[in-house]
Image: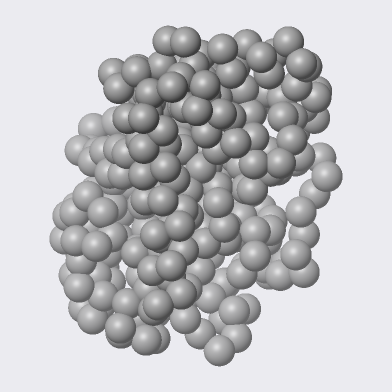
Length: 288
């Protein structure tokens, strides 16, 4: 499915708050740290093949039937949200993902989205927004938008995307990964809107980046080095969330910063990171 708003849940706020408090007691992994600029991107498995623990989706054998993990059993209301809204026979993974004061490098996903076990492979990823704020934003290609609390979004993670929280808000999303089916509507127990709905109200109104701001970003070429590389990357991504810098702003800016630096190591670091997070992952998806 392409990225779209497919539904909305009216939460029992008392029960949700209790589960979000309990979620602080479970052990989170910090997967995909090569994508994180700022505080870690944290994730905990609530449902997985075999019901066991693991940090990333590749830790599991998709041929085993999926079941709730110990962490999932610890969060009864969130477990109920999954059971009541999704066809459990097609649900492969469910995770809580928490992000605070950090941004992710724009990237594509593919490793966890395919496997040789055809009908068990993950074909669709859905975000349910449990806790958020105006400072929490999502990016796909050149668009920046907000997902509101209670909204259910299908996300096309094979397209370049990232997420960010630019203050101390704890943004918590429930991610549910769903297997391949002939009719996508069979994945949902709610009346999913699969029309491609992308409300204009969710799109962030970002002022155009000024020439002075652009030059300020590019001037980081004078200080970028191997130690602060990800901090510079994070500042560029954060600026992308605040201002419209034009097509492919993040990678275009990082390439120019690297070239201006005159440091061949930095040039290679940008090239390698882009290839790892975008090109290699897309090529891998096409080979599957």
